[in-house]
Length: 119
Length: 119
DNA sequence: ATATATTATCGTAATATCACGCTCATGGGA
DNA sequence: TCCCATGAGCGTGATATTACGATAATATAT
Image 1 (cartoon, each protein chain N blue to C red):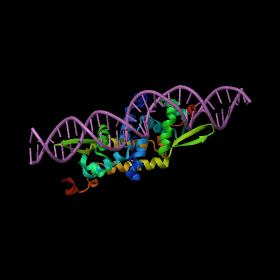
Image 2: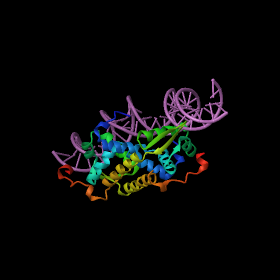
Image 3: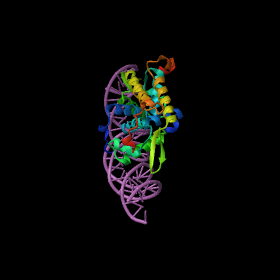
Image 4: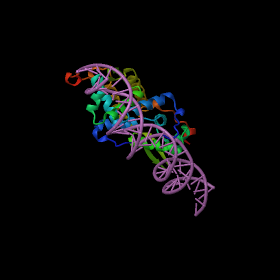
């Protein structure tokens, strides 16, 4: 989308954005919620549970997989999907820190408001 | 984008997706981090701090505002932006719950694996 | 009234997303 | 061997995003 200027941001900011973006669609929220209830499950189970076609689900799974939040283990003719615990917790911590560090209720997050910059 | 099937998801899932999507770009991550350090600041300050044009920043601010995460208070010819504490905390809780409820390390999140569905 | 500073908005171009149907590769059973 | 089921992947059309310059809108200062 447009000339992406992603190089100008820190790896931490980019990682945060990747995790957030992956969760930035209701279908993908529903998918991770469903996966969490089952420990692991097949693509077909998700197709049955959500009102979307198989190919659409497959694409959403791909995006979640690209972000690292889920994994797919080949199991004969099927692929068993599950949340990747390691990355999930990394994302949880990263986003948790963002929300904590940017909490406007927390005075500690603020710089002393340098006069030179506000004039 | 394509026939959006958003009606088929719960309000909670949609809200989560809206918050996550708003944070799904490094520039918007950088913007909220910057805002958090200053309590409130002008659009021009952000333009000076980030390597993006004024119109691009303005659009990112608009998306964050649409998601409710930030607010803009008109102050003469300027607009002073700040994180909306109420919505920020609502998003923090919603995403925190998602990460907690979908944590694969937590057995309590799982259903008893009905035989009829896994056969 | 005119000029300046600040931010929003429009038009644009390139790219990404969403949803679908169709096809393809693979493994299991008749 | 020939199907069927499963799920990945391609191509499509519609829509959204990203980024920019240019312009418009607003409020203050001269």
